[in-house]
Length: 283
Image (cartoon, rainbow, N blue to C red; front, side):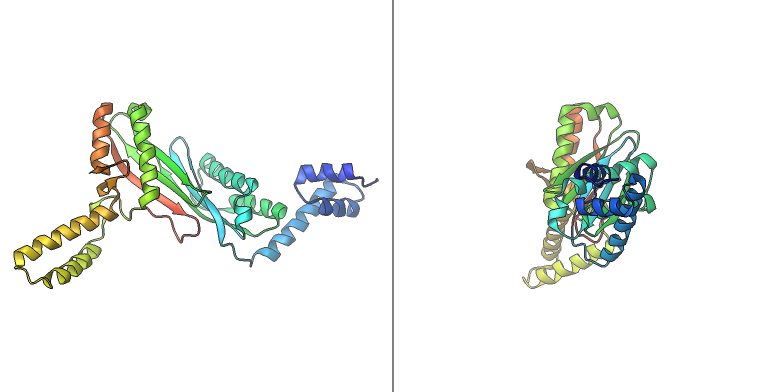
């Protein structure tokens, strides 16, 4: 069988492999399409093995919400050029979709196989580094935001005594603003109750040592320390931070105000953000 440019292009369209690789595979298989596809697969897997030691310091993060779950994914690659590639973007979104559809909560062979398939086409090392899944309750709603070209992904979880509230435009806008807020301020904790007691003790000791240098009475020092601690907690706790769109009130107070205006309770129950290249998901 003659190996024409048209035949090579047809195999390229089917497999996504390079033109030269397609021509080589067709030549080896004497024009047999099925055999050529198998050869390309073997060639691709061999190339993947050679690339496994290459560093994957670039990449992007993805977030997707399903009916009762949400998923966040980090996909890494060697270069920022590939990170902005449409196929790379499609792969990340497809991984999220498959994880939601099949109920995966951990990285497995099927998801890693999806990554391998793209490596054989793009010929650059990639890795599925993180997969995080969040449950969405009956009366809960998840708002998401992806910053830049997938540098940071945010998820904010809301709860109400009436799920119809999440159809309200005011609530939708607030939910979106909260996701933007997390992207801007990346809080360390949901609220003051979530802060580790050991951390509070350590900060209290630091603020006390600072205040004692002022030479004030013990009661005054106590007040100064309390004020410093409260200010610090308002800077690191999501619900206590000044709301990004109205810094005259905290995020928590704004949620109460929006819920009241919409006719139901509105509570922020969880949040998470995933940064490309980070060691873990911040929840």
